[in-house]
Length: 252
Image (cartoon, rainbow, N blue to C red; front, side):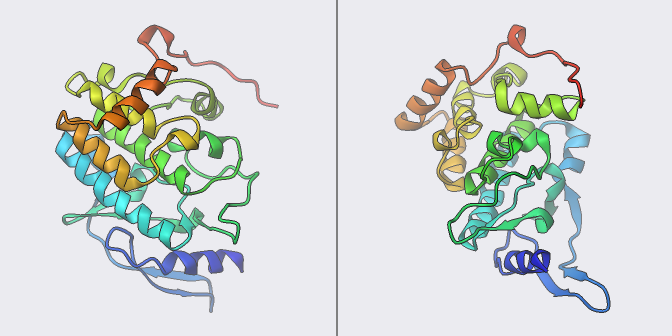
């Protein structure tokens, strides 16, 4: 079964920030054994405090980014990174649920035409059913970062179709508008991380983590500042008056 082939590929990821798969089998019924974890998901932690301290968010981005990088090295794209799939186990953040992960084919792309994932953290190319790759997981990490810093997901609404529309077509609020404690440099970093076009995003999770750390310290690198500023000028962020209100979308 293709599901088991892909799951075994994910199980081959050997990294401290990815939950370990101990055993996979099909008889007498399909089963999966993973390491036992104790703690809470990011979603659970955010329910109690809405937004996180910047130092904690930076730690999250570094650790989850390391897990994403390890998955990419193994040829795996998660496709559904979200707060519910990030687990705090002691001092470690671990990525859970590679159940919708896909192994990269020999062309280093995923089969297009299927929308799989959680809309609030989904990249535009994923929301349209286009080809997805490592850049898709990097977008999700940036969206999670936005949520953890501001208390709001970038494109969430109460309607599935509306959220997908926003992901593809509209700009979210500027992070520092939602959380005035944030340096404006964070706006520039997340403008890159949440860019509509994958080519405009950071090339790696390490780049995102480094840029976020620099922004929080007020020491953003000139090239990152320039890239982010260009995206902001091009409309990366919406002012409060420009935010798209909830729209009813007809369903066929």
